[in-house]
Image (tube, rainbow, N blue to C red; front, side):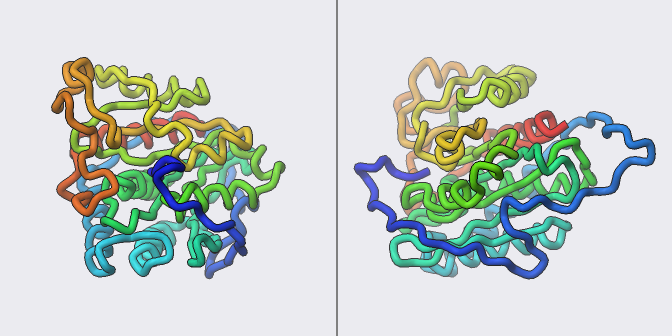
Length: 324
C-alpha cells in the first residue's frame, strides 16, 4: 500500500507502451472464447475450492528469496521487481493463462504490469482480481504486498486446476509502481478507454491480507461485492469492519474513479488495534496491525497464517460467486 501523498515522492508521469510478449494479448482485448457446452446451456454454479495455505506460503518464500537476492527489496525499477514478475508470469503461462505485460515509465525507471486472462466466459462481463507486486525500497514487502500477490496467484492457479468455466470472463492482474502512487494500475485503467472499462463488472483488490496483528476489513464501495465478502466471513463466524485506513491508497482507486465497481479485503497497516477489535479478532490491543509496515522486517516472519488463509479463501469465494 502506498504512503499518503504527504509521505511519498510523487511519481513521474506514466508514459508507456503496452508490450506484447510471447503468447500474450493486448490488455483489455477480448480473449478467445472457451468451448461451449454440448447443450448450449450456461454452466452450473460450482463452489469455490479451498485455497491451500501451503501453496500461498510457498509463493511468499519465493518472493522473499527474490528480494534477498536483489538488494533486499522488490521495488519498482529494481531487479527484484522484474524477477518477481517473471516468477508469477511463469506460473500463469504454465497453467494455461494468456499473459500480457504492460510497460510504463515512472520516476525515470521502467515499470511493468502483468495481466492474465483465463480463456472463456463473456468478454463483455469481466470479473477481475488484482494486487500490487512491488515493494518499497526499504524492505522485501512480504505482507505489503506479496501477501495479496501470492493469494491472487494461487486463486488463478486454482481456476486452472479445476478447469473452471464461469459465465463471466476471469482476469487477474499484478500492478507495478503502486508504492509510487498507483502508477501501474492507473496506466492500465487509462489504457482501456471507456469501452474497455465498461466491460469490467467488478475489480477486486487485495493489498496486505496477512498482517501479523490482523483485522478483517472489507471495502464498502460496491454493495454486491461488499456483501459477497461479508457473507463469506459470516459463514466463518467472523465479524468484519469497513476498511477506512487504506481508502483511496491502493489500486482499486483508479478503477473506482473511472466508474468501475470495486471491492476488496485488507488486514491492516500502521493503525493501532483497539481493545474492541482485539476482543473481536484476537491479537494485541494498542499495537499496529502491521508493526513492520514499509520496513525491512516485512519478511515471511511478518505473516499471520490464519489471516492469510482466511483471506485467500475469501478471494476464491468471491471470484467464483461473482463470475457465475
